[in-house]
Image 1 (cartoon, rainbow, N blue to C red):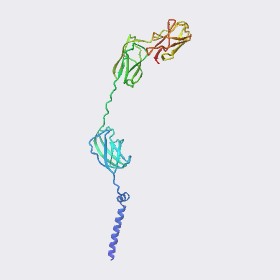
Image 2 (cartoon, rainbow, N blue to C red):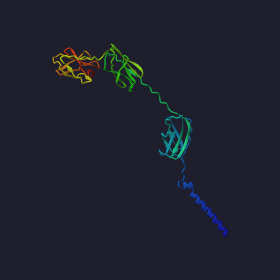
Image 3 (cartoon, rainbow, N blue to C red):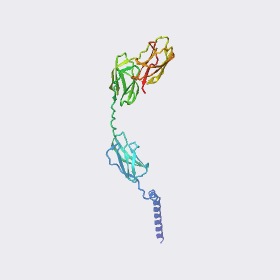
Image 4 (cartoon, one colour):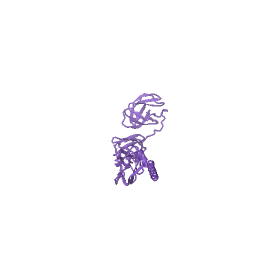
Length: 316
């Protein structure tokens, strides 16, 4: 009887230890506290080539649907777009890489990492070649005269906007580029060594274009001071004149007799005088052909030096 009780006590102790150990096991605690939890799994890709920009589907099971729970890396590039995210898979867009082959890793919840592809060949998309727009230069067929220092506008299509890609030459002498847009280039006529005529060309990205040929050229002639009863004129205070505008020239000892003073543009066009005193000359700007020229004053038959005499002309 006593022996039987001892045996029963030993069996009870063994059972107690077994039960106690089973409830203390971490594995069983996980099962007790989170019954039915199955870990996420990602299926390796069955691909032999990656192409930039392609959409690749990565399948799996029990994947999180939170946008920030899954991260994908192509080599060291983690800037990967993930779309159509579900528990059984998601889509990624192959990013731009510089490597010849790629290894793809999937990280879930910043803890579980899966390598779904290893050392797979990669091809980056080559951008289409840039089609250079055709440059056109419109010849100045009606241009018959240029003056040193004047601004000349050359029109066309698809001029480059970057400086250094356009050059204008007058008898092979480079001109200053004043401004440039895609359709207009303004150049300043350079000083030339006393030519009778001038040929004008434009060089765009190394290619030469015809602009004009056989155009007469006038240098700026500085009139020596003339002591015509002590007449002096002040610097003309404008860089441009406009059709119909009344311009004013000031000075001292200007003749007041009607017809004794003339204002001349381009050596031949007379401006109508509207007012004339010993200190002021006012004249009306007529309709002109040239876009720029030299403004000169003649008093009692002699030219009087007028500082800043090269002006641009504008129409309304």
